[in-house]
Image (spheres, rainbow, N blue to C red):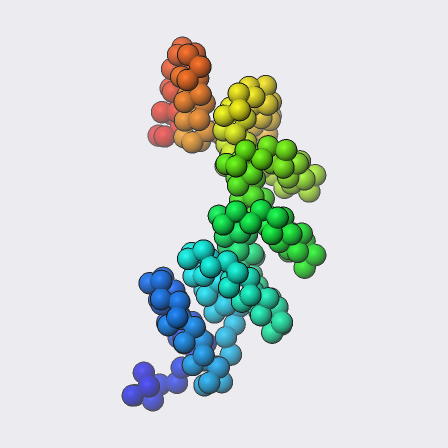
Length: 216
């Protein structure tokens, strides 16, 4: 492009950065960012989002947060997927307090966390058996009239059954039925596995039939 004197723009250079990030070559991606600055080509929210995603994929969360705050300083408003990506990265690296603060910051900046954001944190709580925090956050999303989805319920049901809290799991299943949410393969798989472990084979067979229906 340069040899044929075709001018670069934000779109073409962002594509190049995206290629480097997907190849895991973050250094090259940031080099292109530097080239953009040198050429006077303004990076936009998409450019920074690509770099943020690449950093989070490599669990370089501190750098992703630094870049995120740089966006804010530059007056570039991150899109909601950027918030969700960083939130997911914080959970994966077990920075749970930071994830909680990040959720609050989203709200302060006028970005209402969606079901993806809440489910990301609830899933982390459940996988680490933080069952006081998980129901609390689950209650919060319902207070905000955000509709839980199958994944949200599956996380909570799996954690409840893992701790042999059958009544909690049953209450969640009743909620699913009341809200007319269809169970998926994952949810039925969790139920079948738990029923088999406790020796309720007849009930497990019944749910396995539902599991097969969900698959098809």
